[in-house]
Amino acid sequence: MKNTIPLISLTFLLMLTVFAFQSCKEKEELKLDSPQLIMYTPTADMEGFSMKFGWTTLPNANYIVQISYDNFVSDINTLVMNKDTTVASVTGLNSNTTLYARIKGVSKDGSANYADFSYSNIFLLENIFTNQTANIINTGDITATTVKLSWLANRHVTSIIKTTGSVSDTTQLTTGDLSAKYKTYSGLLAKTNYTFKIMKNKVLRGTVSATTSIN
Image (cartoon, rainbow, N blue to C red; front, side):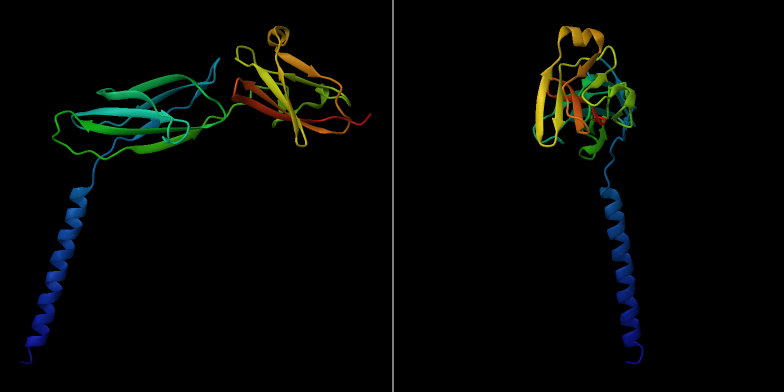
């Protein structure tokens, strides 16, 4: 009788150890492989950004690679659909927005069960205004009533939105503005802060601010 309780306790501990080991082993066996997506540094172009994607490979697998501007709620653009390749490229990406990307491996013959999509994202920051420092127009291009805005050549832009306080107005860029690559706003209020956004239709391509000087 004296040895019964310790013996039962030892047996119980051994059973717990075996159960824990089996549980850990089952969890390890349930772990599914997933390719790792590589998002290379985006390059600015005429319409926005160009970007290259790469990824690590899995045995005997094809791949699905997709991008989105709304985290795959409704906007989904498929770059690779069930193909055995390791790179993909895209051009004309919208600037100043978050680009979401995802990838998954698909077994070619059904012999492996790979993980569902793995996700990545990057913010595509752009400011094509050239006469600015830290998003503030250089003082040499500001007077009490005028602000000059200039921007990079070879960039598709259509309009500029001027805002002061809660009031905004949009100016469509003329052929002359686009050829000169600058526009001067006149008739502004002295000692007033303005914000300017340069657009490609509805896509933002740069933002700057300027405070007019005292008369």
